[in-house]
Image (cartoon, rainbow over all chains, first blue to last red; front, side):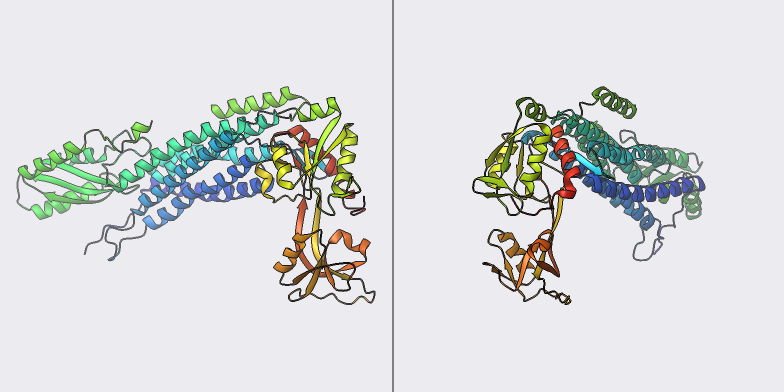
Length: 339
Length: 232
């Protein structure tokens, strides 16, 4: 059995990938320390407790990235002839679920707090013999956790399209959710200080509705990828990934190829699939196909594995027709419907 | 950029607030100052809150009296069971409720809670024998007396594997007691700590200025909170 070739990022993408790994390790350490800080200052404020739980959930995408990218780069072996790259899709599903669950949890919590009319109170906090309003250390803890999330999120959002990493993209959304929620909590804490007890719940509800939306967008993308949807852009699911189409045109640029169609699926970072070609002549066909396959694989770094299949005109039009009817606007899973 | 805009608003809010911050959602502290009346709910729990010949006393009422004096307010005492007090507090019909509350009680979602003003440990104690014998380490199987006013101690004794019995009068064996009571009652610790408690007071929810006022007072009085024990 011929396993798929081992996968390595090209140098430029490798640098981005290594940078992403460093960012994720930093995220783990930093969110871990932030969670500890919050735990020590949270007192009996429900908002602070929620913020702590939220921190714990926001570790999930970072963990999913670190684990699955390592698994994904394992070489294919006889038991796993397609390699392990699909692990990325599992990681993406996990990260998206974490984002959605967090959004739903925060939204539920906020709506419940508002509905029951529970009034949070923030009193004193004694530190080194001085009693200050406990809101101040809370705001300090929120700034400590919120501000780096802002910069981490932006760095991850920049790296994600470079290596077409969807987990990193979901994690960037998670970081955004993180700092936006810290902001909402800070507004809530100050609001409580002014006696506006409802402000805490109201700010949290608005932000968590936003997180739920991001969770749905990411989750539907992860599910669509697992059903092998035609590849779409990592950062914008409304755009089709152009590589398969470009590859088909590239194959047609060979004089002995009359017509070519390519179908591919996204395995996270990489694309895997089949090319169907109608040859003009069939002499030396096996050698020509071997040569074409090699050239096609080096056409773009994202093309991990490609099977080139010679077909007749009649067969190709059948494939073509199938592709056409499937490429109609997505009714069910198009994330654009959630925007 | 949303972030810098909201942080700018935050800073502005804080600067505008001046010294009238934090505030109460329902203005309790202002009301106490203007009417000169603070409404305190209590439920008896020795030695924190006790009532003898119609007079409320114990560790917590002593603290509350000193705090009320600082506010220049007269105390309106209301007695009720813990659940009833919490309900009244939740509807802001009381300002503060006391009764030996600890910080991990289930009420914290419904009412405000002060910072812990006293750390107390429940220990197994023995009459002091003078010859400085090493205390018994293992509580399992021991018979340990508990006062009739503190049924919660019986549970702690049983959890430690010892056998709780109701202590009537002075008896020579081991008893469960708070660590801060030992000196005064001629007991010494037998080396087993049954439980550690962080004692708090409960405050009407959303009343931040009132809570901060109480917290500030309790922090300043914490050293003396347990001195003098349960006397009236």
